[in-house]
Length: 346
Picture 1: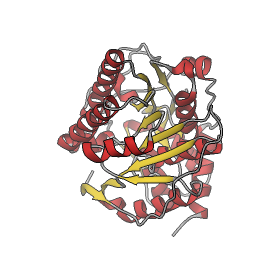
Picture 2: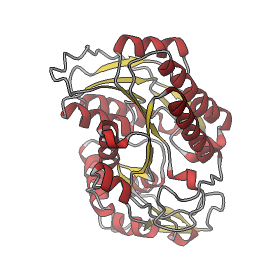
Picture 3: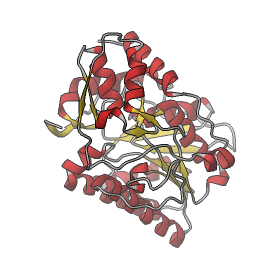
């Protein structure tokens, strides 16, 4: 990947303090990284349920080529949120500002999403990945340890912690053996949270997503690259003959899983795969796109041996404990994705 560098956008935001919840069972939830692809969808689902959400975000993007698109879609995400959502601008590594935000807002639950969200970027910017993914988490844990009101920390991990799948669908007991910086920092984060939670009595929930895709994504995941190329008349580059298999998961399904995990008492100190639960190949993805772009062409390249060999994840545990049920097949998700772009083009 070329031209990768940190991009920080600080939009002018006019947000108001949300009003009283009015219901003792409603929660106040802070989402670290809540203005991102997944965080904004979780925010919408939680507020629709009547919970109070505070977003803590630095509006940071690491892919220079996506600068304009990032700003455009960030504005779309913020516009689609409920009016009155409180947004606190801040870096997760800023101990003072982060603790101040917790003390002023006193959340019951924290959902932590403020990490470098792409393996290729983490591997190329390994120092930055360690700083944000590990030191940022350390700052958050120190802040939580300094207060007495946070009851649950929900952590966004990754299916990359499994490394090469030894079997599929891979359940939560699959051996963890990451093969890159990204997976390594995610697994280290899991262990830090488990140790901290056990020692200091802070409940945690760990979520392992896979191949998230959907409208407003600007992190150059393979699904976004394929969709963007299709819209711009460019060929699709498929490594390994297009046989690489991923558990593509639409962003609304991921948001549903995080919401259930954050609110369910049964999710206490548990780890969940939150995905579609179905392995699909890159060739299948290209065939689905070809329904909307009949002239779409593909170029086959050798497989990238540095990427973990993955497939479907087992979501039985999330179904049984959380009542999680993904709604979007890859066909359904791509239909929504394509329609969104057509309706919101610059």
